[in-house]
Length: 294
Image 1: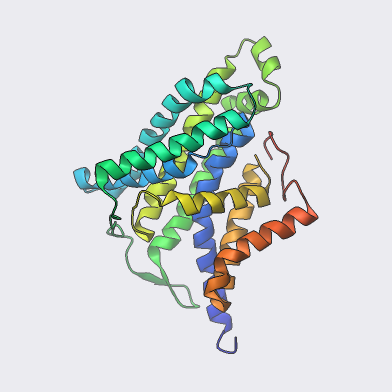
Image 2: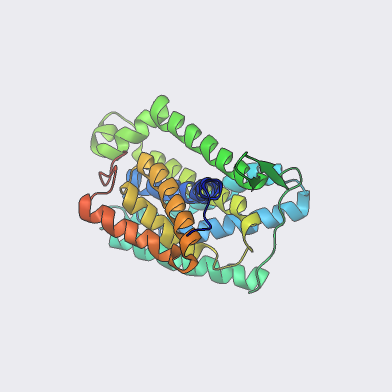
C-alpha cells in the first residue's frame, strides 16, 4: 500500500474505466433485450464470441479494422434476427424459463460450431495500426487502444440513447415494452419491434466482441466469464435499465481495477461483493425496474 502514489491511483481508475467500457458494451445489449422483451439471453456471450471470430475472419479477408467494425455488428445482428424470428418468438408468453433454456442451449451450440470450424486454440488479434502505442495523460502513459475503447463505448451509448429516447421508432419500442397490447390496438406490429430490438442487442454484443479481440486471445470460451460479469453489471444497475448498465459497467470496471491494485486475486471476487452490497441496500438495483426502460 505504501508504494501506491496518487498518479498510480488515478491511472488505475482510468484503467478501470477502460475495462468498464467493455462491460458497458456487453451489458447494453443484454439489458436492452431483457428490458424490451423480458428475455434473459444466455447466448449473449456466444454472440460476443461470434463477433470476435467474425471480425478475425473479416480482417484476414480485408486487412481493414474499420471495415470489420462496421460489418461485424450487422453480421452478428443478422444472426440475432434469425434466432429471434424462428427460435425465440414461438416461446413468448410461455414463461421466462423457456427462452432462458433455449438461449443456454444455443450458446453451447455456437461454441461447439466455432470449435469445429476454428479449432480449440485461441487466435491472437493484434492491435490495429494507428491505435498502437501509448498516450501521456499527465499521470502516466496509457495505451491508445484502451482510450479508443472508451470513446467507442461512449459513441454507442450516445447513439442508443438518441435512438431509443429521441426517435419515433424508439417511442414505439418503449411503448411496446410497457404495454404491447395498446401498441397492437394502434395497428403496430409489435413482433417486428421485438425483432429489431433483439437484432440491435446481439449486434452490440458482436461489436463488443471485435473491440475486445485485441485485448485477449480470440477463443471459443471467451464469452463465458464475461457473461457472468455482465449479469453482475445488469443486476447492480437494475435489470432492463440501460442507464443502469452504463453506470454499473463503469463502476464494476473501476472496482475490479482498484481491487486488483491492492490484491490481484481479489479482483474477481470484488464484483460479487459489490453486487451483494447493492442488493442488500436496493434489491431492484441502482436504477432498476424490471421489464421497463430505466
